[in-house]
Length: 546
Figure 1 (cartoon, rainbow, N blue to C red):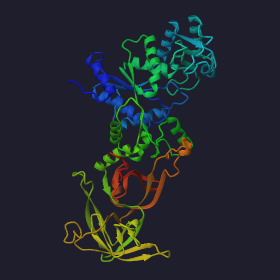
Figure 2: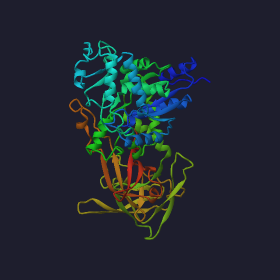
Figure 3: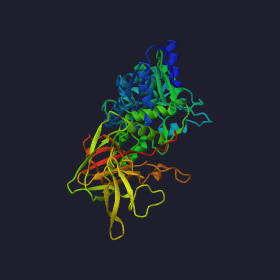
Figure 4: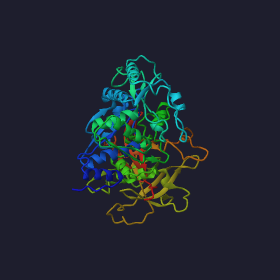
């Protein structure tokens, strides 16, 4: 059966299968464990694991742990958790460090072939002699060392006889190449640092551009899919595969990375936000990390739908974050249960109810899901409504409760305003109303026309809770303000204390998502600082231009 390709990467794969170049498609996801995955990585995850699923292939998780100064087991574990959260399964869990011995042996092979040499230049000298886009580089005076001398020096580098940075192993390619990456790049450096897996066994480590194609080839990867910034590195990738004499080497294919407006897509900068205390951690709900989005309450399926809508392209572009919110909102609209919360409560006394009288009403949990069931809400003499749902001096087109007016309580009766108690500044502190009998659904007076329906909570059964409202960590860039540090949003978190929630909200598990009627989608976060708390996931309003 022929599988239809949906993007240019899949076009290549389909052709490779049809021509018999490959019988089994093998991809990999190769993160460096130097931070938590962010939303930008979700696109690569969806592409690599999506190819596995679509073409019945395989996909490995291989950690690029070649720089122990920045890597940690914490990041390894967080990456695995994020991938599982998205619903993907890797075939093998591998590490670049699994191949340190083989990688070293292949470096020796290159020295013996005369295409690698030990150079005594430090990093500054290498940069200074690399040349520019219009001028060729200068050959190192150590470029023509004999094979025997290079082998001896490289062995001594491994044995720890030289200081960090005093020597490197460079590929001998072409210092006049128009591609600067091919101007005798460094492929090994001396680095004394404890590795999270190999301990202190090694004091020389391969560079990414050398270790990566070797890992791909040794794993049997057929298509090495990476972001567009590695396009200029592809000739070096192919050179390493050729010089190492790999049979049927992997093919590198580049796609446009995921860029989202007003969203930080740099692990280095995200790490700085954590270390400087701008956020509570990598999984702060404001963070664009996968763990942050999970903590906030984003459904994994919504993130994958977002990646599918963005698509796979060859040219970089910037995506409106409203598209991600649209995907989250669409998912929650179908799956989140409805509940009532009064954010800023205004007391209401229903004068024609008895002090101990209680009336029960069934509210549909999700009108979009006929199997969602219902839950009961209890109407008592004293309730809360939102303070903004009553106005002494209503603005034009105001459709909620006014003096002498009518309002419907969601799922229950219509109320008629009777009187208002004011504080010393003339602000409403308590309303007196009467309910209209038989105005509930199915009643004789249920068709009385009212301008609005409002959420409400019984004072007797209300549960105090705090609401955490999140906004973007960055404000819009301007011609004058472009640096991330100057664009940090001081209002990225608003804490609303003293909200009132109906008991139904606290019957579910921590992590459950709800639509607070007329407000937003929230996740139940359990107790935070001793108070029942909810995280705002996304607003009800959709700003995305479909």
